[in-house]
Length: 240
Image (cartoon, rainbow, N blue to C red):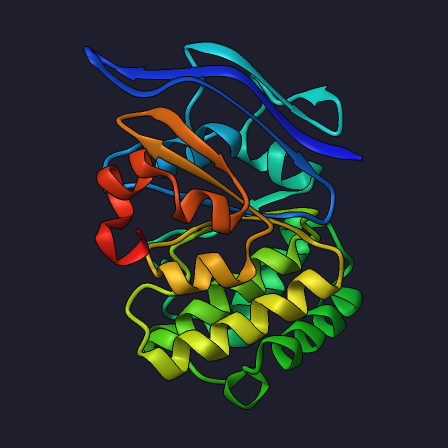
């Protein structure tokens, strides 16, 4: 089943075309890697899909229905959740309260049900021992997990994960990959923007490559890694 469709999406900021005539489809349960140099349009595309920006041209369908003119809140309620490359928890609230709020307002749960869901997700992402800690005081790897926990608490069918491994040491990247595999095993659909290439190549079923707002390649990780245009624009000779 096709879950997400982007048809010829363009987003401009003045004379800058951040995303140009981009089309892609995503099947339910699929994990798609979205890669490219800084400024290639990856985060802008996420912001268009999630309703933060409106596209200047094109159409976006989720489960066959248009997301155009929907607010970010409504898109979240429809089943699309986005994490940010800049971690933004409610710093003065506890880890538990951060996930609780996402369950209450993202899914409109009753309080008792939301509390149970928050605890379940904290166990799932490995943060239950820190549930009472202020979110602003936990270490970066734990904040990354908290971002994921909050997104999952909304009941999302589609996760837009924007550099969830940024700032992580190699052992922490492996732990993050293990966690994403757990998320995948639940049937959640994922688009992953990431600069840690070994992570993208390991977890993605397909990879789309952007450069200057254009899609320059699409295929399996192996196909993309051998594409001369991708090697020149982004991956470099180590993948040649």
